[in-house]
Length: 358
Image (tube, rainbow, N blue to C red; front, top):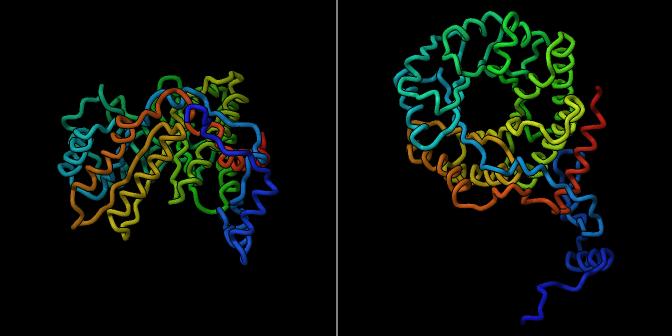
């Protein structure tokens, strides 16, 4: 046994495919093919001979576990109930709060955040409606250290986010986050290339006004909402890292110094889904995010009068199980060298990059 190297004899791709065809008779390999999305075929017969250059993501992405985000919709409850939700989240180790607000409703931040120690928690405000007037009004009433998240996917002109900062850009630039939402569904490479083109256009406008590109890129966030396909999430997240780092290096002209806080994973519930099934789905998606160097994970809780509170507790404990009971955070990419993942990572990254215009 001591001489056994735990290996199998190598087999050529031709013989491997021949064996697959024999095992699938009379249907053939085509019978197990499907699509990532319409027109993008999943090729289930990747062989080591098809391997391209191995991809290893930067070590800095794996120095520590993802941050735990909590998304709280302030428009559906009274102030006291929202305060209870916030304190409950903090008791379970939440590190960042995102308060989603409706600018047309009262925003009693002091009541919402009663008992919150701002030196120990990051607080951000997300808006449904955005205009320079609304943003300035909110800036007057929120805590000084709170961030404002500007959703750049709502069709504003490129000048909206600059107008919101006009007059105090040097002091307040780091108080804002520019959010670019990316969904896993649809024709993903085409849709994602359009989002990155928007980032490029925003960056171009920003620098044309005489502002530093670093101030813009350091405050951008890619907000990924994955679907239920585990492998697709792994590949898509790796692609986003590569595209972002290419963009960073071109814009800043500094290799390997990109901030690692640009990528969030938001796991959204379907309230018609059985809560136990949603926990499984959230666990799998959180694992995919953790394995790919995602900076922050936010599991959005299901709503429902009859939904037991312990489901929210388990949602948050998913983070702790991944963070404290695994050993994946060793400053090394745990998926480096997986040639099946590398195949599509190369393919989708190249396709997105070819769309972009600088």
